[in-house]
Length: 412
Image: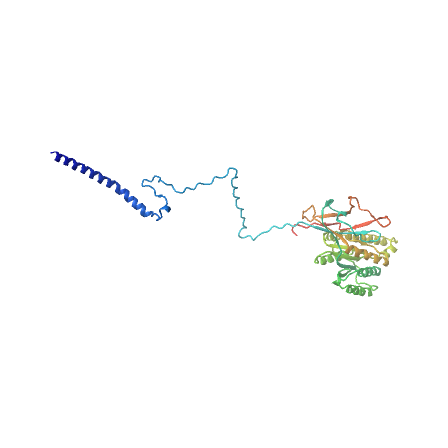
């Protein structure tokens, strides 16, 4: 009985042990299967020292034992300023499809003034002046001189000579004055000869051969005592036509006007030719009145006709003088042939030896108005310049410069 009871207890214990063994096998089977799958997906290296930690996540999705490498951002220093904001891109402006490219061009006006300084007694050019010795005014306002230099260069001149039936004395004076001027010419000079009575006639076009000019003067001299074709002298029209010819030539030009100055039948009035002269920018007129000796001998004669003639000649002198002064030239009234060499020497010195001043006017408007110019000479202290000769005697001098200029129009 005891043995049978003992066997039954042992058999019961065995069944309980088998039950727990089977239960344990059932619990361990999913875990083994998961480990085999993990090892197949992440094979381990052969060297156990180089084995990496297992970073596989648990089935439940929780954190594993090793989190791996973590990147920690670098802490910015406290004193480092924040980065500057990025500048916005520049706006791009495009022309309309039908409009071509347009550029803006601004012209700053610039005025060039040739100034001659001559001694009144001898007509000699005064050298050695400095930029600080000059003061230039436009419409009464002082201008800043930006450029200064002494100019002495070849000239481009037009001899405009009256040759009409006014009297052979006038023609002789004209020929003598023109011939004297040619004696001062240099090989590099360009000179033309134009005579006029009722109309202008080109005797010699611009040339550097002064012998052609002299030969033309000689041909006119061969018939000087013969009656001329016309007695009319249209000096205004001839002067305007000559200026139109010179406008096509670049650079500074000169007109040597040798005439009585009497105008009889010109289409232009004095006001119109005066406006034309003022508008010229680079033409200087030197005027020589002819018939001085004859007029001196007959001035104040009896009769109404003589008085009217005297008034006409005085008016002609004033017009010739005005043409010269406005353009920065000189006017001469020789009475004797012996005066001609000094006269043409003065013209030659004034043409070739000048001071050139350049300034940008404070009045930059391009409105076509006429601007008055005045040039003065001062010493180092700003006082009017005084000149003396070797014996410390005062010398009077004359400043030769343009009276003014006409500003350009905006549409030019």
